[in-house]
Amino acid sequence: MIARTITRTTSKLRIVLANASLAKYPQGGGHWTVFLQYLLGLAALGHDIFWLELLKTTGNPAHDQKLIRIFLTRFRHYGIGDNCAVLLADEDRLSEALESAAVYGASKCRLQEVILSADLLWNFCCTLKPPLLSMFRRRALIDLDPGLVQVPALSCDFGLSNHDIFLTVGSNMSQPDCQVPDVGHTWHSFMPFVHLPSWSAAPDPGHEAPFSSITQWTWNKAEIYHHERVLNISKRDAFLRYLEMPRRTGRSFELAANIHRRDITGDRELLLGMGWKLVNPHQVAISPPAYQNYLKNSRAEFSCPKPIYRELKTGWLSDRSAAYLATGRPVLAEDTGLKGHIPTGSGLITFTDSDEASEGVAEIDGNYPFHARAARELAEEYLNAEKSLPAMLSACGW
Image (cartoon, helix red, strand yellow):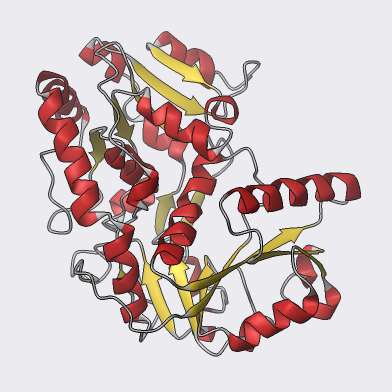
């Protein structure tokens, strides 16, 4: 795992970060918050950063332009408006030469200059592919879903070999008990992190505040196959394992999930019947500030990772958990193999079944001031962008 010590780079780097999930999802305040930590953290370290966003056209020009306006407005709000560009094209042309895409936020001439002069590309989740990817002199893959890239890459060409460095949020990836295939590459692990100046420890919201989480609720077949093994990637199935938590603990649990009020699957009725409160994430966390406010109004996080993270012992910790901890909110998380990578038991409590989860609820509620302080301290020591980002850059050769 990447060391947590601060190792400041001695020179200013030009770093391009490439992604394809922000412009198309403006209502995802939590999702946006994840990537803002990279932007704000790298900028605070003095680096020259540039965000390259790929957007598949919706087929509706007016809607495409609306998405682009929202994206550029937000980047200007965070002081990055002059250092970003959106490439709009059909899906099969997104990674072709610049001439085939419409570019917004920067001229094609400037974008080409940025790409050719960049010291480093951080390519989130294999967003960029050749030939556009090949224009960068040094390329690092940033893996935010350990297992979801490596397992399919055994049978499909994801273009992993087009990268020089491999960084993963799976903190247990290099350990013998981790069952994620390395697909012939060395993976450098890092924990999710926060740009701490953007977060403050909030006052105790009171015992009536819920244990909460924000998630996507997936009904469709959510499985991938590893040899003869079926690996589940559904957050729905993850939470249904702990359906009885409100009744077992006698306290409030709230889930911000995209389950429509006219849901016909029966999931909404099932959750409500078991005592869960449901809210719309696209209302309570529609922007990064709204997302932060939602966390402040929660008592703690109840985190149920995708089953694949647990089954393959990836050591995955949610970026949401990092944000809860930075807000001074304890986290109760199903264990994915975190032992030895971050202290647990104070501020961050892990569980493997409903009995342990219920005990964790009682521990947090019974010693709340202690766990709230410990939560913030964990964020400061282990999930601090000022420490994590230089270590990641060091792994990239800087």
